[in-house]
Amino acid sequence: MMNNQNRRRSLLCLVLFLFVLPLINVTTASGKTEARPIGWHVVRPGDTLIGLSQLYSGGTQFWRENWALNPDIKNPNFLSPGMRVRVLLVQEVPPQSARLFKVSRQVEKKPTPQPWDRAEVNDLLRDRDGMRTGRDGAFEMRFTDGTSMSVGQEALIFLRRLGGKLQGVSRDEIEIISGQADLAGRSISRPSDIDIVVGSARATPRPDSQGTLQTRIRKSDSGSAQLMVYEGESAVEAAGATVEVAAGMGTSVVEGKPPAPPEKLLAAPTSLQPAANSRWNFSNPELSWDPVEGAASYQVEICAQPDCLQLLGHLTGLTEPRWRPKGLPKGDHFWRVTAVAASGLDGFHSPPRAIHIESELPDLTPPTAQLGLTGLYIRYGEALILGPFAHFETQVFDPQSGVGDWVYLLDGQPVSHQKWNGPWVAGDHRAEAIVADRAGNRTTLGPFNFVGDPDPPELDWRTGGSTMVDQGGLPGWDSSPLKRRRLKRLRKSGVVLEYSSDGARWLPIRLEAAARGGRLTEGQPTEVGSVKADRARIFLRAPLANPFGADSPVQLGVGDILEVRSEDKGSGVGALRFGVTLTQANHYQLWFEATDLVGNSRTLELPVVKRSVQ
Image 1 (cartoon, rainbow, N blue to C red):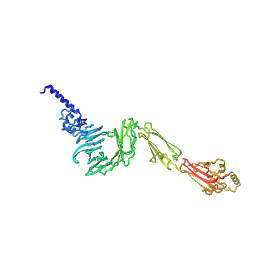
Image 2 (cartoon, helix red, strand yellow):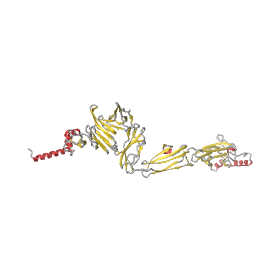
Image 3 (cartoon, rainbow, N blue to C red):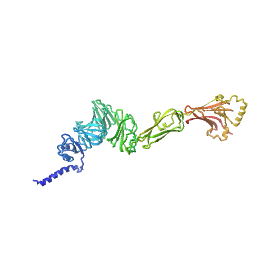
C-alpha cells in the first residue's frame, strides 16, 4: 500500500499534469510542434466538454485540454447554456461550422436557442444560428470550404445545414432575411458548399477554373432578391425555373416569380478624384469620378480598411458623379464607388483609394470670386456687346482649401474655358461660371447676358453722278471759267483724285508727288483720311480722267463720283479709313478699311493707275 505521503505526491503530480498537458503544443509526425487555433462556443442545452471536443478538436481525448482552457468550469459534464467556452480547433474553421474572423461595431449573434448577444472574433456559428448588424456594424465569417462571407450594415442572416445532397456532400445554407452579403473565395479546390437563400430564390455560387469566387446577394427594399456575380458563376433557382449567371452578370428575382434573364453588370467607375494618398487639412473633401454609361445612380463607401468591412460613411442613390461627406474623422481612410443600374444591380466597385484627413474641421466657406471684362466691348443702355477681342477676367480666392475645379456654362450648356471665353457667334448669349474649392464649396459667377458681335462691318461701293452727295455737287463745273482755271491747277499739281466725307469740301490725292516725296513706301499702306460715323461714307471723284485701269471694276468718267460706304448692324461702325499703297507691280492701290466699335474690320482694295517711270 501507498502511504499517505506518497499518495499526496501522486495526486499533486496528477493535478499538475492535467493543467500542464493542455499547454503543450500538438506534436506532428515530423516531430515539430504547431499551435492549435482556438474558438469560442456558446453552450446549448445538452452540450458537454467531451462532445465539444469531438465536434471541434478532432476527438474526445482533447476534453482535458479544453477543460484547462476554461478554468471556470467546475464539472466538464455539466455546462450551463449560454456560457462561452474556449475550445481547441482541429482546423481554422471546423467542419459543419463557421467562424467569425472580423467584427466591426454593432454586431450580434443568436446561438439558437439562446437569445441575442454581442458577437466577437473567433465565435463559432452552428446550424440555426443567426447574425445581425446595426446601422454601422459589419462582420466577416469563414467556412470549411475556404470561402468567406462579408455582411454589411443592417443585415439579418441565419445558418442552416442541409444534410446530404449533391453526391452526398453536406452543404451550408445561409438565409438572408434583410440586407446583403458578399461571398468570396480564393484557390478553392472544389465546388463551394454554400447555398444562399433570399425569399423564394436560392443561389448556388461556384468558383471558376482558378478557384476564385465573388458573389453579392441581397434582399432589396422591395423584397426581391438581387444576385451579382463578379467572379465565378452561380445558378439561381426560383418558382421552378433555374438560370445560370456567369461572371460579370447579375439577375433579379421578384418574390414568387422566376429569375429575370441575366444582365451585364456596369463597369467600375474610373478617374477617381482626389488622387490616391492625398492629404487634406479639412474633413470634407469632395469625391468625384467619371460618369459610367448606363448608371442610374451611384453609391459611395468610406471605409476604415481596404476591405471596406467597417464603414465610416455610406451614401446610396447619388445621381451625380460626385459626393462630399459632412466630415470624416481625422486619420487614414479608404473610399470606393459603385455604379448602380436601373434594375438595382450593383456594378463592379472601384478599387479602394486611400485618403488622409489631417483636421477634423470642415471647410464650409465657398470661394470669393469676381468677374470682369478686358478687350473691346461696348454698352448700349442695358445691352452689353462683346467683340472677338473681349475676354472675361476672373479673380478667385479661397484661403482655406484652395481653388478646385471650374464649370463653364454658355447658354445653359457646359463648354470648355476657351469656348466660354470667346469669340462668340453672333447673337444673344448667357454666360456663367461655377467655381469650387477643393472641399467642393461652390460660387457662381453670373449669369451675364451679352450680345456676341464677331462679324465685320459691311463695306461696298457704287458710282454715279453728283446727286449721290447730300450737297456740294458739281453742276455746270465743266463750263465754268473758275472751274477751268481750277482744273488747270489740278493737272499741273498731279492730282488724279479728290475725296470728301460730305461732298462739300474736297481734298486732293497726289499719287506721283507722294511717291517722289518718299511718303509712299512700297508694300506699306499709307492712310490718307478717315471718317468716324455710325454709317460712314467717303466720296471720290476724278477731276481730269478716269484713274482706274480698263480691267478695274470701277470706271469713273470726269465729274463722276465713287462712293464707298460702311454699315454695321451689330455694334456700329467706329471708323472708315482709306489710303494708298504702292504695290510691288508698280501700281497704286486704294484701300478702305471699316472697323466696328468692338474691333471687327473689313478691307476693300481697288487698283488705280500704274506709276509713271521718270
